[in-house]
Length: 342
Ligand code: 13P
Image (tube, rainbow, N blue to C red; front, side):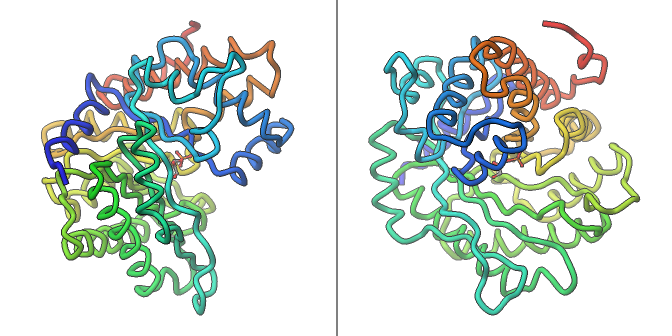
């Protein structure tokens, strides 16, 4: 393991306030989002969509690294240029989702465990040859009646730790993503308690597996009430709970935290990230940035609709959403920006 190289990659990913773009939806998830937007669910549509993203002019101003899916990393633009070459040329660092998805956990109804460790060492070697410098593995923890169980949390954090070890073995920075889902009617306090427990178990496991904490990126959820709970908390309260939860459970040795958006609208996710960075500027020992998928891409899909004629407009909104995310990372985002026309 080259610790210096891992550190250098992380520094470059988040330089000048930049963040990460998660464009790594699996085929199933991408098709689901396409179906909702009325877009045909074909390989060619997924290719065109990913081409739209990576060819967005000046995306590198806001995006330091893009997380790809295996299908995309092997695809080309219509002009025959490999997608990865487009990104590298733009100065955007290549990342890859390497987990094989969250599958039902045997014996534990309504809980999931993420698969993908078998053969991972070889896959990482192949990706590294392609130029990949960071990876992602997502564990999913649901809150509900009597869940999550400690067994489910431990199984998932164990897998995340083994994945992280395999990444660091080949100098690929692991994004460690333990996502506590927003689905459900739980309170903010319940989300806080579960997120804290998950993170504490995660960092104990990472320690046991000899992970270099200075060579990982943590990708957590924000601490927020469930989407079905009618009592939603203020922006400042979510920011405060999120920061307190992270301070209680994430070692200062971790260089960067990059939030997932989890189903929050683009404006709400940006507002929360902004409050976290603005209100707690002097308290955060880590870079606190973003690794959004939906909170950057949702409006892009709605404008594109699978039509060539809409590509330029869709790229404009992508560029804008990424800029707003950077503004939020710097504590300089405000709702008035939403009215600006590019
Ligand atoms: P969302 O921002 O849509 O939650 O996606 C982030 C992600 O990459 C989940 O793994």
